Image: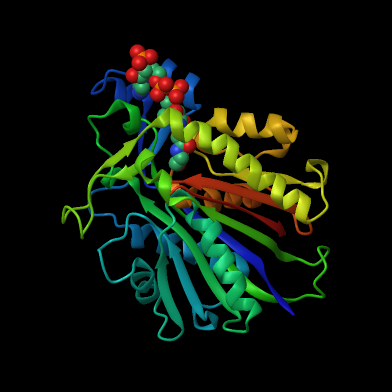
Length: 323
Ligand code: UT7
């Protein structure tokens, strides 16, 4: 059998940095409130002309370079995004064109903040089914385009950016000692749609809408559901948190990450956090954090990595990867 092994990572953050102090000038908020409640100090914001596909393309090129894979070797591109360039076609096909890839297939995946976990799961399935040997899994978001910049309860939380991984088919005996994606566990509950959504869309308002969130409710579900997904992974693979080398969670709020770490007994030094400097970049947070961990030498071949996310839907999930 084959598994999707992560062969390279890449990332892109827009040049413009907006600090909490910058937001104090236009919103009834404070640096201290934002840091205490979320851990966020700043976020990167894309230029008006900078599109999700532009950011995704740069991250993808970096990942390809690290993997030592040429564009022509790619069989598929999955772009997890909730902020596509256009309603259609998919941002992934624009990235395909930007890369100059003339074969294979490319499509977007909409699972909001859990998009990367979902996309990695699908990529792994394609590879297991023999539908591709090499693929790109990208999380790319221009969240600034759907933030209501007059709403302090959401405007302080989000940022823009893109992360990408190249996956390749690695032979496997089916053992958890093999490298690659060892398991993915996806969940959603659409009855919770109204606690986090945009108040628009093509078939409802005919515009994109802006983010609306009942923060306290989402916070409560995030801890419960992300925690349950982590426990599910550990149980299914007969592991304890001590066996995990790196916990790489979605970066919505440092307090959520710390609560999960307490519940599962992950020491702080085993957690990769990027929220302070990047805020919540939705589907891009996990591949951005993976890239940070790889490039600064924390994540090493053979290690066990646990990723975990929750976002609008609600949709959530976790995955276990042997790097
Ligand atoms: O990525 C998708 C998943 N998203 C998440 O996981 C987000 C989950 N939710 C959260 O992270 C937190 O709920 C927030 C960071 C959004 C809010 O933190 P909180 O501790 O839950 O605050 P709260 O919403 O309960 O608000 C507390 C107070 C309120 O004032 P009153 O009613 O107590 O007078 C808010 O109006 O803080 C006020 N507030 C603010 N104050 C200053 C809300 N936003 C701000 C702000 N600056 N930016």
